[in-house]
View (tube, helix red, strand yellow):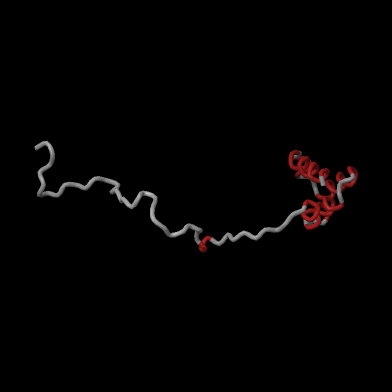
Length: 99
């Protein structure tokens, strides 16, 4: 498995390998003695054996934006004091300050 990870890293870093036709990359991997799973992933465009070799365990994640968060309904953390964002404006019947 270590060799497979190293090969994946090499392919990722080397643009010539990364963009090489599948046949050419498969030939390179064959000559280098890469794992059967990696060669199959390239040759047949099937990563299932590669996933198995690397120990991939599929995980299900709910990406539904309509399920909401997991926040509990509870008191705010401001000790129950609601402060207005701006001070109230004086009403016309009150004298303005400084007059």
